[in-house]
Figure 1 (cartoon, one colour):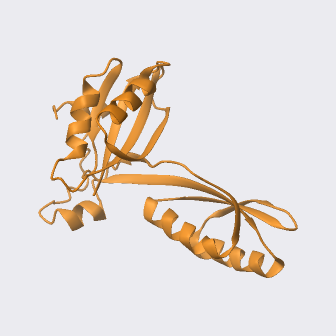
Figure 2: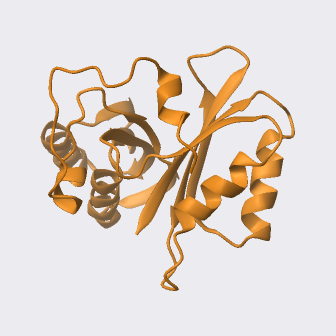
Length: 194
């Protein structure tokens, strides 16, 4: 099972290198890492998706504890079971015939992805969705001739509404509290020690 770790770090040229070094030293099985600017100047948010091995050890909890010790790390939170919105971006360049282009235009209507470039023989698609939908579309597009493909890592933000179908499925005792702003500010996410 995958675990999603959200890390807030001060901007530092060696910050990501320290985290990558930790991941390789401790042999975590990483699915993706995404880093970028966030809501605060001089800080960056890193989203790390790790996979638990079958040895019974909780990789998400271990990783969060280890990252918390690193220099310039402000906050670390395992957000896997919190209600969240998770997205990933996929860019695909396909070589297509006129008939295939029509098929892809129909798929764009169904799956709501963008067509960002078209020539006589190629088409570039931009797909932004959760990991499951991105993987499904990637599998569906395999029947066409893929010239280039680029897929980002997952990024995630916690839902203020507290509604999450994943949390409801995995934790049936989870009760939705609607109409309540349960986070006074973003720092409340990171108050509890892991």
